[in-house]
Image (cartoon, rainbow, N blue to C red; front, side):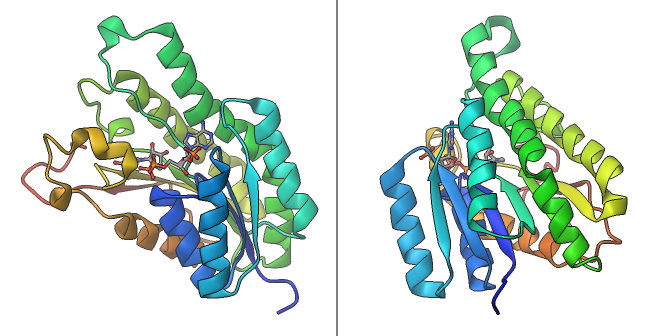
Length: 247
Ligand SMILES: NC(=O)c1ccc[n+]([C@@H]2O[C@H](COP(=O)([O-])OP(=O)(O)OC[C@H]3O[C@@H](n4cnc5c(N)ncnc54)[C@H](OP(=O)(O)O)[C@@H]3O)[C@@H](O)[C@H]2O)c1
């Protein structure tokens, strides 16, 4: 195929974003993957090229810096003629209660988990609309990694949960505004997933009891295959056990 489908994955070097990038590559997508640490990003890209034979563009970008976020969107447009799937996986979580939440912590999480997704959406919407017009039956998809903490508040995850609730709302609004033109957004809201981000939780919660990155990537891939008639606002993924609405 001369003009394969493409995806841009933030946080695509490892964890959930890495697993989604892997599945997209396995389905033949050309990719832009982004993160801060260049070495990990280059390693991931090299592996995806070698295993799946797809084109992978790497962009070092810090989601706390709006100029770098916007440059990431522009870099994808420069390299590829279309954008079929935008995966917003770069995210940050710092535990802490409402009572002592520092301004610095709140700003950092707002920047990475909410402001960066908004800026990247603004930057890439023309590309997503163009791809949706190229394949009207399928449309273009935005997949944002939110969290169970954004669906049901969890003590100790005040700022994180608030930014993820905002991200879920952002996905709903985007679909309301853009889905009749073929661009639909889905938030994925899992409980604890076994990644570097949850290393701090391993002393309290057995790694084997956590969701796997494959569980989340499976849901993301299902979204990419839906027709443009379907809008899925939010996919909540609970861990096995006796409580549904907890991380
Ligand atoms: N793990 C969970 O239990 C869980 C549950 C629900 C939702 N989520 C959400 O899922 C997403 C992925 O989480 P994960 O567990 O896969 O995390 P992870 O394993 O820590 O990976 C995070 C990814 O994001 C990148 N990243 C982090 N901060 C960044 C920044 N400031 N600018 C650019 N890139 C940045 C990291 O690369 P660099 O460090 O190189 O930048 C890495 O590629 C997050 O949005 C998270 O909130 C996770």
